[in-house]
Length: 207
Image 1 (cartoon, rainbow, N blue to C red):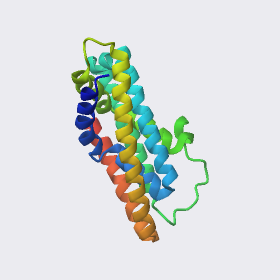
Image 2: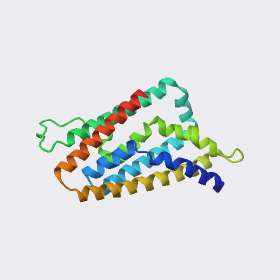
Image 3: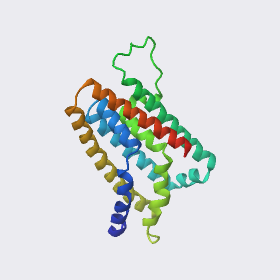
Image 4: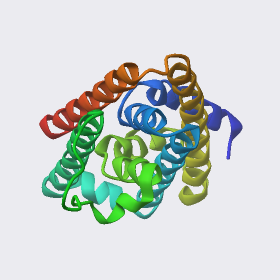
């Protein structure tokens, strides 16, 4: 692929990747509740979600979803419900003295994937991630070359940018957590993260 097109895409997608959003909140949530490794799992899941969108775009499925109002609404609402559920569960986990549940709480089938699953599904169910590959990516494709290899190169560059940023964020959040390691501070951070996830879910549903 033309290096100039690739560098131009990186310059265009980097500011979009740095805007705080769902991945930002999920990395914070998992690092605060666990460790840097948990934040890295979210980053890996997020990148895999981007690659799913890149694959869909390469075969035309993303265009089909974005063209169908019903399909787009279904994806958007599913993503919103997922974010709100994550936000509520995060908020509730901040209670240090919550009594143990007598019955096993319901968990979605993908809950066993942990941070990786959260990063993956929050990205797959995010219409904005799909729109990147339908509005931004085509501007950097050459009509004189096969489309699929070009999308693969751009997706790899996008994944590298996102992974680098989320790993840096993981280190920053882990450092802050270790510096202010008190139950009250962790509870406040956890509640704040839960509130952000709920707000993102509501915004996604209302958009």
